[in-house]
Length: 132
Ligand code: AMP
Image (cartoon, rainbow, N blue to C red; front, side):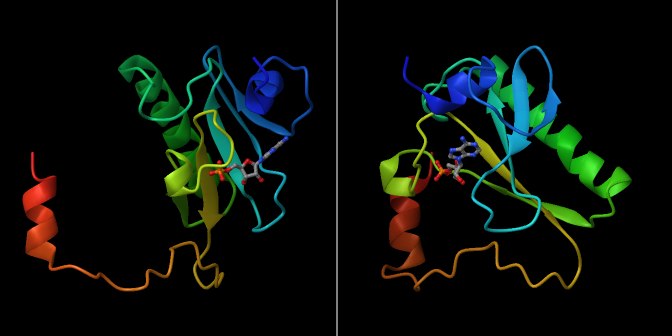
């Protein structure tokens, strides 16, 4: 499969590896857009949350928690943002499931939360569609 993150997981493409275990990998994002930008991926190929099985999700989130705690306990950060896009409509550009981890410190002035343009519909109308 011609997947850039599969190739990174297989060691066929280089990365700056932050953490690795049997099922997951964390490496530096090459975007250079914000300090400490990391990506956590399952080594097996899943496109995004929709095709990812529960066990893999569990493993990936455990790795994300490990890295988040490493950031705060060992690296001097106060918090982390976790960002994730599923599907092209959500802005996913690499179709291998990944979670962005962005370490934060108080007053770092990073704007990691999207500036939404304002809701266009009544909350209750959308709620009727969304509730399970
Ligand atoms: P997304 O838009 O959520 O799919 O994020 C994809 C991310 O992958 C972007 O932040 C890219 O900078 C990052 N990326 C693409 N290629 C590489 C690579 N070879 N090594 C590390 N990060 C990459």
